[in-house]
Length: 377
Image (cartoon, rainbow, N blue to C red; front, side, top):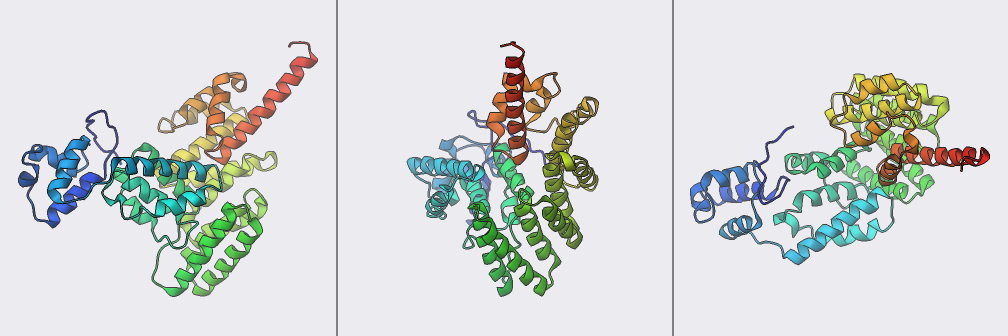
């Protein structure tokens, strides 16, 4: 989706408050002309409401005041913003401090409704729902705000879709029970309590099979596959391929995770490449397609097929890692300080970059040993 965005006051992101203003204005049956009077032009207000531009804070405050919408204290808003930033930092680095942050942030659930932090808070709820069964929010609910997300928020949202994703919500008591079990299993997995997580996922799978819902079965099979990726790759492959058979929509996720992991192992690199090619061929999602091509590019570099890598990089203009990939086309790229520094920054972004970081460290260590042995240094 491409959205035209006018930049006002140096801001460069979409703002959910425009939607909030539109909803409240219509609920109160106030015309554009009446609400904009003394604040801005009706056409300017229309652009705010329709997510075409972001206004300055004074305009939002005046519009909120006329609509009777309470605003959050600036100091409190900044505090919540810092906590949200910490949550994603801790989550991505598997830091146990994340649990304390979750509990603290949940206290502000009702207060962020009129804040520019609302969309980021919904993303927080989405990620936290995987570890807390009391948080009920679906992927579809958060996706409704996609056009109001900045690039960083969209990246987090799409990364969530690359994980097992959160289970479809339902009023069915059996589904609610399974969801709670799965949230607890996710929590165990996040705490590295692998065996407890595995047992609970298997219990969830048994209940899902009893219900006979193929989508639910595929969802849990993906969770089992994800859990086994770094422990037993053969078992992970069985779970992921089974998930794809139960529900074809999980083929993109399954083949991507298998391929991205397998190319990191010499004995199954080619099999990983085949999964990536099959997954990309059937991929209908633009974000997924870019991710597939990123990993395929890395595969060609690892196999020293520079010509094929150059063909793939032409299709990676939308990748946020294009600078790293461009460096990898250079001869002796692993000796580049710029490449080394970028890997240090990215090593917690994904298992792929962690793998590249470790591989680069091993290369530099071996390079140093050779230089010392030959009196080069």
